[in-house]
Length: 142
Image 1 (cartoon, rainbow, N blue to C red):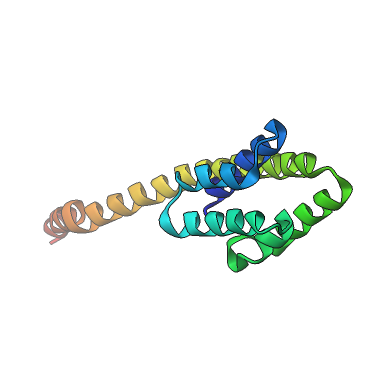
Image 2: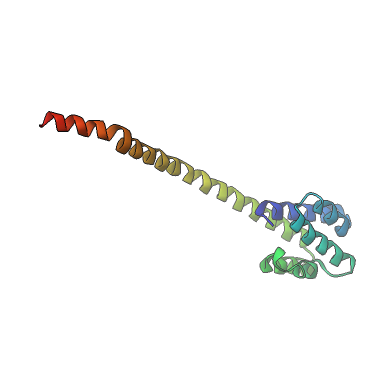
């Protein structure tokens, strides 16, 4: 899952828990908004929940779709009876990570554009401006 989809997944999951809605149906509805591979992973979790597995086990059976640390956090939330709070923390962490990623991207944008402009100026100098100047200086000193 992309970081954005993972964040949306957690928001949908937390929302379903907060509303007291059945998780399998909530996940199925969310899966309809995802791409094919991601939707299959979410539908697999929903199916495992229908079979009576706990959420952490359902997430773990999906393999690479969900990070192991995330599965352990969900498992701890289930055992402590605070799954909604754990998901809220995961959501907050995901939002902060996205904010930092955007800030770093913006910070690198100006130097990157500046390097491109300087490279274009160098090429123009070497191909367009430099040769006539070299010819003019050569004529001056000969």
